[in-house]
Length: 112
Image (cartoon, rainbow, N blue to C red):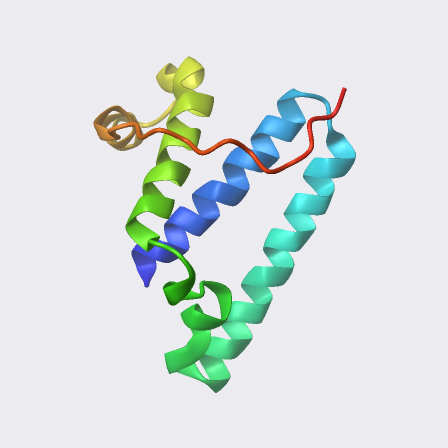
């Protein structure tokens, strides 16, 4: 559960940082709120129904979790590698160990 939770956090943070770097402040604010809302919701589920907390956020049978986490890690590595020197040694080691996988084409519309 801790691993899945951290990959989910990495996904949110990568997208928020990407939007901030691109000057999409409103989008970054929206993602920050959505991530916070999801986190509060999970914490509530953990307190009330521990066994279903993660399943409420991640439908395990909907996709291959390992492949999904590898895609999240690949996106994060590609996004944060230019700032590698700013990270702690532990983070640098982890980022460098990520074996990049092929990413699926985005289903998000491209903004011009």
